[in-house]
Length: 99
Image (cartoon, rainbow, N blue to C red; front, top):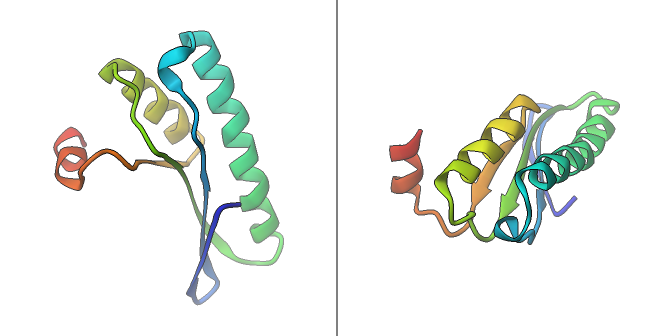
């Protein structure tokens, strides 16, 4: 777990920071890697749930894939797992416009 924040009242946020090069792999490999990384985040989440905490999970990447379709695919796959995605190189206004 790279980020752990206690917000009070039993709420915590956990996030994993990854440096994956999503442009260098196939769509099938993207799906496999997303599943693997989601399982890792959920291991952290479950450890907090066992302690009676409510958890907000996330994953942070330094760079978005070049193809917008891949960004959408990845965000959809992580969303299916209940995990928020943050791209460090994406300005907040741009993210809001895509939402």
